[in-house]
Picture (tube, rainbow, N blue to C red):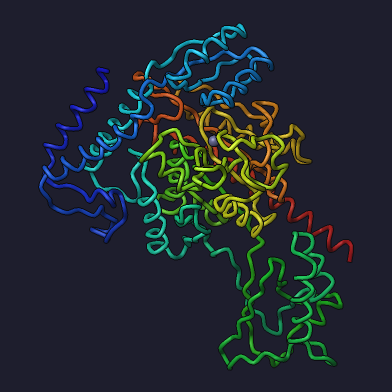
Length: 588
Ligand SMILES: [Zn+2]
């Protein structure tokens, strides 16, 4: 309580001391460059207005937290599989919220509404299970979280303007959405913003493509160049990386008909104006070019004639791996947002390791579940699922657990109960938010060498499959996972435990329909679920609640793991690419 009062006093004091304030809706956004740096948008206003609006904000947050008044947090010890089953049963029947499912021998934090507390505890007593009251009334901690985040954000807004979004608070959807667009316009050479689709409630789901070459390669060909393989080898290469046979055949047939002279068999139909190369866009990743003289019959077929104008061929860049990461697929896991925002900052704004941008293409989706995320800010702080309706008459219960909605063993290790936190939806990929992620994975196929689905909490790096069966490259996946964990452990705060690495079903519990498993099954070589730590401060903020002190550290230490994983993925990708080429050429 003392900490809460102190935070509120600080907030009021700091507000009164301010003379110049920042635009609250765009706090932290890039605006016009000032003195060679991007400065925060600022305007003069009456401090009292600011004071009133912040009071209104805090009042709104207080109203949001009312629904949790009297909810208590218990730590329930789970000694064996039977205990875990009983806890799962009580979760389903009573609506208690198990924040982190435990492995036997550990304790599970369970949020218990006041109206079911007596029944819940009596059932635990009946089963002989041990428990401990951790937080009497979670609403007090929610109020504390609001006050501390607001005070920290206000403290930073009075200090030196910084580039990019600040790491003092948890930014809302609109702020992040505008930030992604702004980055793309400020850094067009490396950043492309993509609208992946719309959420159930119609919010734009944006992600960034960060690449030094915009995911493409352009090669100029002239009579000295050789296009390798219009037909058979071309087909083999594309099939090897997962492009459908019919699509490749259609394109190859057109390519063969169009540029090759029927008798002389070389490219002499270039119609580019002198000095202005014709552009030929190849829609498939393996339209590849070899510089220099070729030797096979296919090479001869495709050699441009001496009189041909030079041509530029643009094709998808298969020379680099992709690292794809996303956060906030579970709405209440707020601390995951700083992890992806920090990665964006280190890849675009404060680039200290240029090889990561030069050698790797990145896809970063910071808010995978925007409806659920906004709901946690305005209505229910501990909402986990998306906000889909229509699954129950009157929508008494609603929302789908997006991380059980993917097309891998869908519906076998999740709940068909709409009221459950792990409700899997009507069918695989029924939810638009899951479709955005699956579209990215399907579009980029096996070029995604590393996929990271970032969650909280528990300090785990988990991999597939949720059934307990390991992927064929399980040993490599484990090795990369350990290296990522060690990189994070080396810089983590001492009070947080070391990361645990392992198969998600073996380390925690079986699942189905997870993004991690879908990505692994779809050809992403190294696919993981990160569970970031729940740093517990002296004021007891715990679990999903975020202490502003930990926000930047969460971004920083997770980035250490991501960097390590990305470099491992790059080496792995290059080795596989070399092997694949050797194998294909050896079969010709
Ligand atoms: Zn989660």
